[in-house]
Length: 354
Image 1: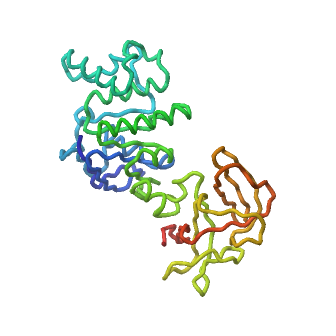
Image 2 (image 1 turned 60 degrees about the horizontal axis):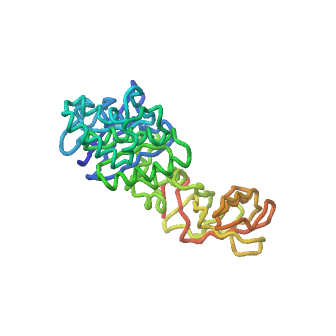
Image 3 (image 1 turned 180 degrees about the horizontal axis):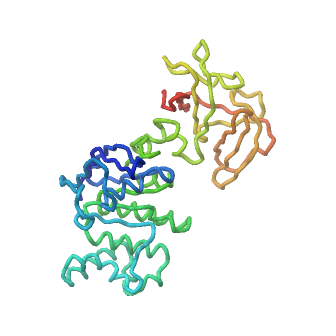
């Protein structure tokens, strides 16, 4: 196990800059998730750490050793890919033992490590099978076991659950989290799924266009997003946003003239207000106190909760409610948004104000 430090790392392909300069420090045992839309640079960053790509500049230091120019095999890093990349003609035991065999580890030591890893991942009963005889989740466990067998300083996961169905993704997500708790190996995990990011990471780096938009704990990302992009990317259903202006008295006015709250001291110009769906209170009729008034456009019952979409005329918002639906499309409603739940962003820069 070891800490990881990225100093001024950046990457260009020809004249195209795909990763701008980044400085990231991971203490020993941290689980960092890189999340963002396709093309944001998260997989490129992981490939630089793994040694599969050469950086255009900067340094990568693992456990106090500069590994920037080392070959992948010399970095003591294990990587688990989206595809399982198992050898079809080998048994599970042979697949797990293969990297140890390549390093010249004695047969008895290889067998001991295979049994230890198999016990950790609860796949002892699968050791004699071939990959074609395994389910998707079992294959992913074998791929993780092969990476674990090396006793790496750093674990890299590149969207390892993308090929699994929804239920199996949830099960494997929990297994990966338990595995990290048991081993304590420093880990970087790439995903485009913000639910995976929120549930797995001790910290999350949100990337866009090769830049880190925010690097923080899951709770901080959710409760204090640094800008509109982070606010919209983290959270499901997505945060509601609508434009506001600050009047002479300091109140925030919606496009229909209703006041939704007070602007922060010193702010001026157009403001974008964001509020999470679960922080809104939906009431029937337009006579209630809520400043957001419209009609229900869609009701989405999900079982334990219901998502109610409300058309305000200038925006459509989502309200998340507990239990079964009590509203129907076409109902006139008002929506209350507590001042403490409002996230305020500068309309020009999209940066957080409050």
